[in-house]
Image (cartoon, rainbow, N blue to C red; front, side, top):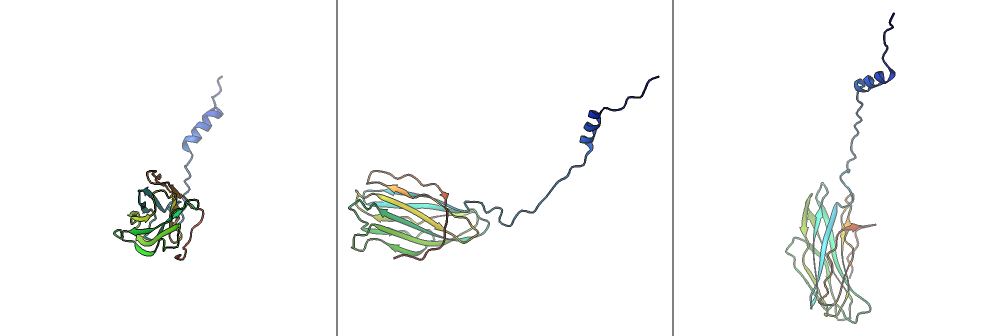
Length: 188
């Protein structure tokens, strides 16, 4: 007499795996899930010439809404350098509203700043005005671009870029995480 074969434990588990219903978990994404580091970013290039430092760049708004962005270019001559900023100029062709512009006033100033703001549409970029800070060909120091925008946008600022004497080119600055940001009052 033969006994009927019963399925093995392995066969039962294999069949169960093929017939078990799938469970899918869906959760709602938070409202600002797309607001990752770098909603407002920029690259900027300080170009050293024999008469000064030309500052230019592009600000990008990758957030889902239009943002009022404030930008400032700063030039600081190294304190060890005997040179000073002697003048400055900028173009206003790129839609930025000037909020502050200053250079040497005859007192031997070693720093200069251009500052302005502009609404940048969601998902687009805006070139910064070209600002030139005039200083002797031997002067050296650092140039900085600083951005601010209202929360919840995350602002990523490029690092400060050194500039050397005339004939020594600065490197292009890529965005870096900004540890903190806020709206500062115009200085002068």
